[in-house]
Image (cartoon, rainbow, N blue to C red; front, top):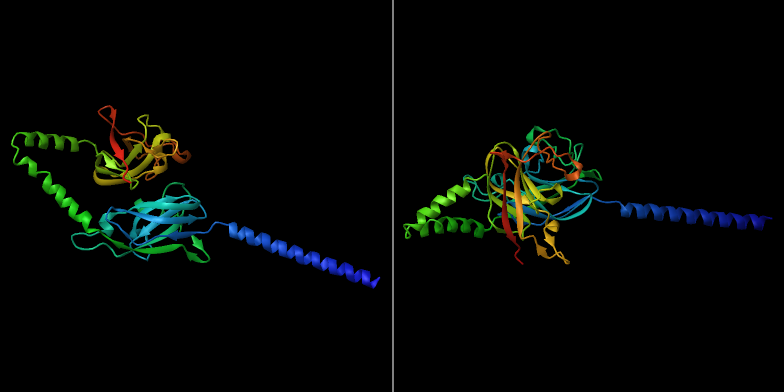
Length: 316
């Protein structure tokens, strides 16, 4: 009988060991599959006013926020962009160039910027971390007892600064030798710029649409559509604008929706733009996206919505 009991005990012990090993393996696989939080960003030129973060891995929907100071206070924020749960690649963030780039009192751009990952609570799609008098609800993501942060160095290209004066010099130059055509050109250009939305045909290879100026009767949004139907399903990008004249407005576009064709390699040749108000929840774009209501209605001037269009191409 003893040999039998001994044998049974051995088999039971083996079964327990196997069960423990399986349990550990299952736990290990679950931990490996769990999403982690991470930011990957390189040093880069910020002359365009837009930075690109190589990848942001988020355990939940949230925000990637750029700070000019490692104190990470609300007053140090110079840009932010939404991120989805999972891996987000080539995330573009529009910066407040006045706060990070060269100025009259500062010859160079801030040499270092810091990035931190935040959650999106409780109003989804609204960045709530002290800006526009909003509460501090979208707290920093914490993993292993630490916030998820990164930093990168910045530069500004001289090409960008030299190109602007060249454009200013060459525009009036032809007007002086040509006495009669010049007044006609000068008189039409201000008329075009007097419009609420001023935008040129442009290269969208960067994924950013640039607007020379947007004049808004109240705080609102400049919204880019891929169709003149102006349906919420046609929206490919939007950016906030303040009451008054907004210059050099940048809109980050959803480039995946701009291309058509079997291989998704044909760029939409024309995009349409509409000015919309900011109603109900301030700072939250409410026009059908992410299941939100249609509260931010089109801005109407003289009985007509404020719209325009521009041509596009993409450099290789």
